[in-house]
Image (cartoon, rainbow, N blue to C red; front, side, top):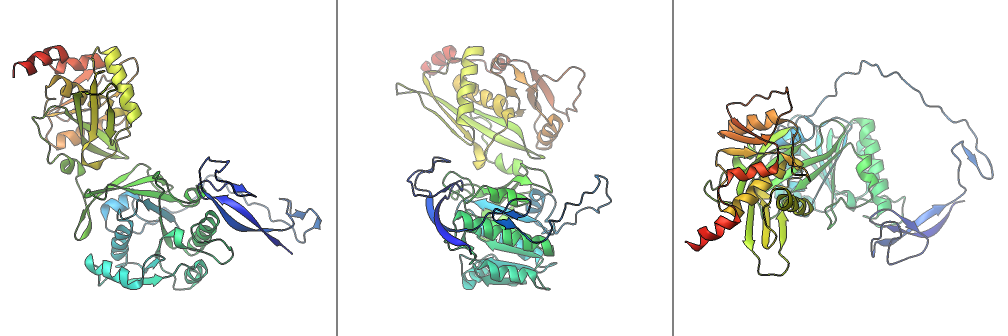
Length: 473
């Protein structure tokens, strides 16, 4: 008979120890070891044998099939919320598991409640909450104008009961579990939210959903580092991982796909939080540039790509004299290490002395840019602020800057130029195209650059002349 023993499991990485310690030896996290009960019994070998004798029965082999097949295209369940459907790859696939993570209060429950209300017009949908009561869910639905939606609600955190519902003949087509960290199974003695409970609860729910073709939407909490709480294996178990990003004090929210077995990764959907819930933003580029000042210095428009979607984003830079011995380097929405690297390239390869100044960089609209193609736009915004000369207001800029100062080509140039032309821009500053390669300009005047030093020609005054200009004011 199996015996129980106490072990200590790290809630960050899942590492196991037989004695408690303040620090996890696997990941180095502090105060993450939680006591759990593990079942200990005779171990089994993969051949089906115990160490103390043979097991009855014979193992079943694996059936292989050829690569060629005639499987029909995957069906999709469309919510009619265009931004949500596109991030999911064109809709929800029956039998798939989707994990939605985000900061507390960012709007995860609101988004899924709105999506379920749309889906309930064509499918049987259920919302299971382990955090809120039925009355709280009804109150939120009424506030969002969804009080008449044909949704089935339940307040439960018992996995066994939910799995039994998914096994029933009238199981829901789409079910939301809010949240997976509140679910527990009585097979384990550990508390809800522990690594073992989250792993086993997810496995049981996913298996039941796949067996009966239900779409499973799991809400996941995130840690203070911005990653999903619980074991990393949870992200491998599901088919799609979505992050809901944004500042609670800002009206814009971004739904980003970081994993998708049925669509493109890094696809984003943009929403705006209003008193009626989350509203789709059909043209994010126009919205992010709506309040742009065309005469201000230190700004440049970057033509970026988010997944398969082109998007124009304003980059803002401020270079100011420092009163400190060590000048500050701060960025919001862009990697701070890449900013330091670009400043070193500008000073070494282009002869632009920024050293004694504070540098502040901001991506307008609460966006976060991770593309190397933003290097050239950031460099233009920095030069503009330093020289007190504006970047041409009708120009978009993109290109990657290397350590030797060369401007390297980027992908999907045509899509970037097409989006810029659609919003009324007249010129584009881009990397030099490869020999023999032609890209439709879409009516834009193209300025091709090979080296970051060539960008200085856009600005008539650099620091030496700027000092004289400011002194004459």
